[in-house]
Length: 472
Image 1: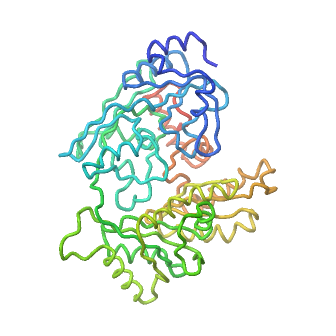
Image 2: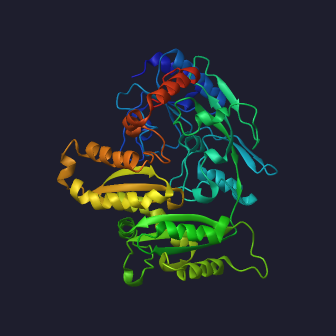
Image 3: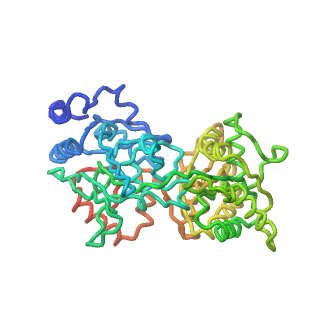
């Protein structure tokens, strides 16, 4: 645990509200979103970039390890302390003061502690939003640190694509503040330094301020559940893209097991499938426009229905069935998948990505092999088929004897990652970044030269004890 004189010194820097030491008050900061649990020596809650700098400087000079924590919604144990009780959490939850909207530039400068929902609530009156659609409600700093993607990546891209500038505090003895918060979209005057801090889990510095690109809120949308013909998910996607272009904003895949779990967990969800029979695989497709309906313009529902009719008539039609429905009902099912799957039993989750043509062959391969390799494990996959991402979720019944085997989960993870990375040339972390849960696989799959370069960058930017990830 941390010495009392350190607590006194940090309290002088941050004030009484800026330092938490009572175990009952620190408990929430030690519990992650998925099973991980740790114990902090203390929690620091700076309210400004200057306070972050002062706290980081003090901790580095005194050898105190820091774990940056944003909204603590990550799924790979990247933002929680370990069980030693030696690490100090530096939370962004009071970093919520600056909000500077530039309507002409269609951008906003915000403190990194803003939650995504709070940011979009403030932007709503201007018909703008930060276009990263997530089931969770993270803080912006964590979204930058993990480079989140979301359900509308197909149209808007990830956080990296929508970040114009950053302000970052380095974990060195000075608590150096790097001002990289340009609001320019085009700036080729040298190294784009902000990219070092996007998607690297806070290992190289703590993001405190962000300049974000904003998009117009869609004023029209239409959605449908699509049932692809056998083996025709990718042909269906290509046919949709060919006919809809930039109108297509989501193409989300959902397996039968995942959909059934959602219906079981949320009885109020409407089952739109004939006779209640869930297809083996379902696509959620969305099309959208950012302007109000114009007189004489074909409504988006009609546009979507006409395109689906065209696809239906194609030779070797990739579409077996389609159900156009209200967006709020269609998306309600998609947003219920994670919680539904989690309530089936012990969840062992993977966030994988592939070339678009490999995602369904990978899933089919694993479903065929799973009963032989790991009987008793249920595959409940869903994900962002339009950009090659899949949440490959595996569920084990809570009373399964598999859970009594201490080697089971590691063997399962090693097999899944080996097939995904070595056989299908995919990524073991599509949008969850690297945390303690993925550390061993980063170490195994990353070339030594790249780890050597990362170690050098770590020493150059933040030589202090910062974060839960070792990139070197």
